Length: 165
Image 1: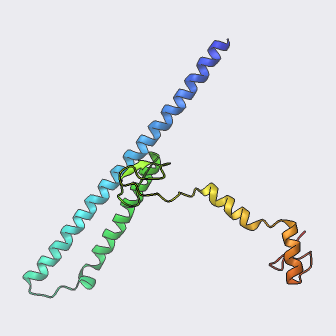
Image 2: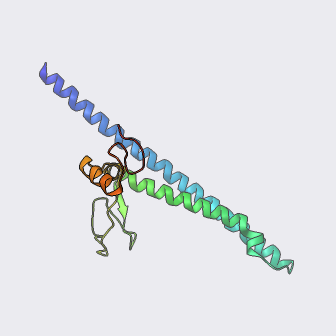
């Protein structure tokens, strides 16, 4: 009986691992599809800009980029920003980051780039942020008492003037 339990447990673990990897691959494929769609839209906007420029040229009119092409340029900026976001999501799925200097992909935990040797900034996770916020909010009672004596507030008030329970 124990033998079958072990086999069942191992099969379940294998299934979960395979399902997780398949999910990551599917999400990455969707993101790459979105990137290609945005690149196609950007190329269409480039063509539209070129067409407007040529029309102004043939009509011997002056071209004002701010007035005539602002809308297309704003759309390109938005699409480019989305592409950058999709690239970051893909990197997060694959446990890879890019070098701040040469943009070479590398292991997420690497402190130095294997290509150019640049030291990478330490990434702060949400969990680390929560700990820092908690530490900043927590003041030991002894320090509160010392702070209250220095500021002249009573023990029942904290430094914000709120009453402690």
